Image (cartoon, rainbow, N blue to C red):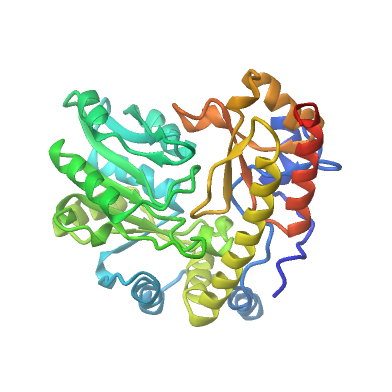
Length: 389
């Protein structure tokens, strides 16, 4: 399929386009929506066929016999990530924000501290606060445009009240693919402070050429405190299916999670299960490879154009389709550079402070779109900051 052509999503109950004017003051009539982390592309053909088969059948009843669905997940993790899992380890949640909330509910109590490496995906802090737990922000080090971790500083921050750490791997919004050594350091940190480690790996398939994602499950000695989270939704642009997987090898942790799932009456959406089963196939894999290659070209165009603007710096993207742009060296206040992006360039982008400490001088731009839109965004930004050039 071609990624150069995308359907018009305006007035389709699409939050990315239909809420942009209310939230950012950017009209969808002449603006660009580059905030919400879903792509503009149609889903892969095998997914479209699975949904069409459901429509043709015409009965949308309860889903039974998850064996093919679980086998598809098992195949994908082994084939794409070299990770051998047992089908009994898999719990299906309503997406991974729900999966995160379920982990918080199952393994912590109100008042407990939950560690985040910030800036990081904003929904983590939102659900932590809503659950009456404490957000503990361990700020990443921006080392010449590359995020790194400082565990000496993080160790000093711990009070003993912390019960969990949530890792975003690959990292959103910085686009880092953490190295095995970095993951080992995260695991050691979790063990030192007796923390449950939740590894959100929703972007694990969306790596740029030359980058290799390492599942946290490959790190030795962490199984007894590790919760893995994966999904088809980001990879295949089916976020609206609200299906995600919490994968737990340790039997004690698995029993605790199962107990909370049962208590809350959780069961999956049949549409999501059919779509995920169709996605995790060789045909789906070929689509992902093509999609990543396309995004990589978008990345090159965006970074070249944005980095040519004095004072702007787009962080090198190793994974995801989300560009993280630093406006620090413009010398502008956050309100000014944000206004230029929204009012002059007419682009709706995520505001950096929503991602926590370290995000104050940034905006996040979604590159999962036809190339013409990315080229248009670059031209708009260059015009909006023309006085700096």
